Length: 303
Image (tube, rainbow, N blue to C red; front, side):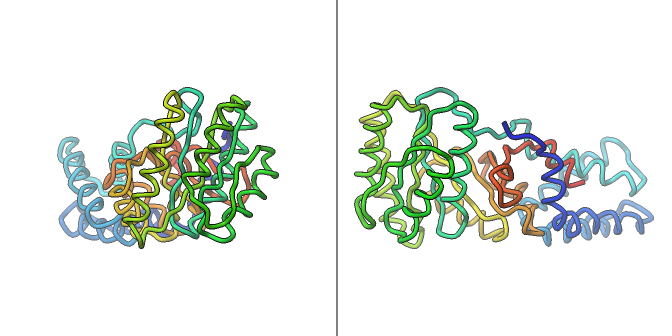
């Protein structure tokens, strides 16, 4: 369903590679021995690639262990072991948006401007192309353009949409969407929900109400919550995720705009700091550029 991940990713990660891998290569090529100075320099490069302090320290500790265990003396070999450490952190599991079972409900959250509505449009389009019957719910009723934007995507993707007036109760939209979903026997209901993090209490109440409606009216559905984050915001994205985790459980991350940033190291930071899988990454504007995340290929592309 999502082909050519590696090539797209390699192109998309070019800024991160310049910021991270090439600096590491240059540094190692000038090093004579593997010593504390080398590790310190390496740590600094990792932090500047937005891998974050905590994750960078963890990587260096694990790298030291591998270097000791394998009695490595040649600095030129350090990079291969660094790649191994990063693959270990990212884990084995490939990202997917295909539901474990149907019917499924996917709640999508994220602050304004991260590419939430666009991601929903692309996910819907991909699922429909894979043979799923999809319905959208425009439950981000507080952002003026959100309903219109989702409607444009519903037409583009060729899927139905349930919407109310701007400013109406998001839970009421979800209620109607659940009824429609059951009546039309859809496979996947995707709900665009609000992300007003500055008002956490309201957001918590709203998402709580939406979840209660889904559990009560559509208990048989497989439910998951995806958080959309913008890679260009670097460590701010990790902070955002932490705040959303206080509001509701999150099953996966959709990381947009990975092609537009030198901060691609954020993927490693998210997995290590939050232990939430990155399911999809955006490496361009077109529908094909939202890709299922493959951790091993990510590490390969990075190095």
